[in-house]
Length: 309
Ligand code: GRG
Image (cartoon, rainbow, N blue to C red; front, side):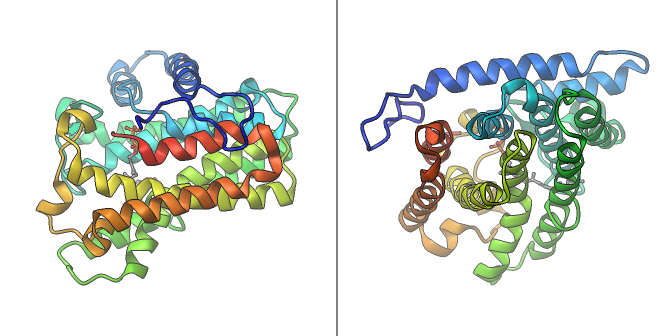
């Protein structure tokens, strides 16, 4: 089955066309991101920020954010500033991850990496600029009808997901694990729960908070997103082995070359696929109480598993 086939809930409810849904949401996100960063003086930094932000990408995180807001009863407009913010943060982390001091990559999203085009100094600053703008954007662009306590909660969650308790912490343990072929499953899970799952979780949960999710709903969203977060990384590891550079838009086979411990290196390809499937199914179960409204988020969970890039 291809990634964007019609997703039909087993309970034979109305058909949901995931391909159309993703295409429409991606377009909305592209427009909002484009408008978020006009080019003013000093032009170079805004151009560098836009270069990576508008270079494509699946836009999984903002789409998750918007879908969650809608499932909880909110709207796309309410959640769009937060959706843009998570994509700015994600892009920032990619720019810094690709730097020579980190993963040292030449390609990302099918284009030369930011530092290859603008130099390391500007690439670092472009990442910093995107990170700062993300917080400013949520604080200033979220519609005024949204209670301020929700906005503060979102800002706090985003900060935590990115900092030492999130992406930064995961990246540190990843760097420390380089060249160690015997790292444990526990360490691998720590790395990816922080590097990858934390921002996916924040994307979902913050979309819910903006729309006024209850404590119990936030708990369900948290469990859903932690499951898809780990599944996302398992598939990422599999694709590093099975996909081409053209499909990925970045160097393929990097993990194997660097002798990195990955899920397929611990479990093999087949078991890794099966574990990802189990995680996606567990994620979908978490949302069952939302009925038909959960169909988009459940379909996105399946897409995460069947994607080819
Ligand atoms: C956050 C302050 C701060 C610093 C960054 C460099 C770093 C610290 C963390 C690395 C985080 C990282 C790059 C994790 C990998 C996550 C991942 C699986 C990326 C691929 O995401 P996709 O497939 O990419 O959604 P597209 O291009 O489609 O958006």
